[in-house]
Length: 285
Image 1 (cartoon, rainbow, N blue to C red):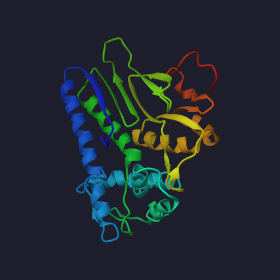
Image 2 (spheres, rainbow, N blue to C red):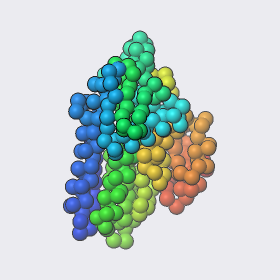
Image 3 (tube, one colour):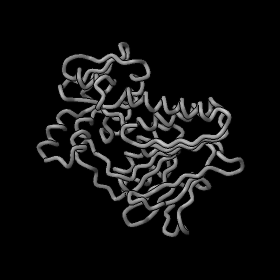
């Protein structure tokens, strides 16, 4: 999905059916939102930019609307219209003038959304949308629903920084998943029978500057009941660095983060869920 490998394991009478349904969901989300597909929702919005509004399906518009709401909540730190910048960086590190040109096309507040018509208008040709910052969370939410509907004994999935644990693949053996640093170092593991986690441990684009964010964090994992929000928060917290970390460690959702000095920060709410690698020395509550 979107160039990322997706891995699923399942156990139970309906395991094969569940994996097929889940795979179909991932494929459909890619079809809807891949910026490289001209007939996708994202492709059509880009083609219509500066010309006319694009009418979307109910589910497509709802997800897009969520993306714009989170863009507003973040003050532009997350921006669903950052597609021109992401495309630019995908081709290699751009020059300052290239960044400036792309930035002129970015700005969630310039888009016109019409809920009655389920339409969106991007006012400038060349503008586009990119839901990659929340699309993984949307996929995780839908996959977890499939595992429950199929009444599986257990399932485990990973894709795009998202990890899902559901039930038990082997009776009496709790499911676990690793959290890694940007260099691949295992920071710890988490365990649970119904868990969804979103991890960022690679450079994240800051739509406000058009550059990769400078941060002293090397990994951020967020555990939240809402997978889309967890996916979004992972970006926001990673970019904010340790200077803005404290409020997140005290929030309702759980956070496990590591910085460039090797310190590990873990929400107290994750006690019994997250286990630091090694002896955990240096971990900060």
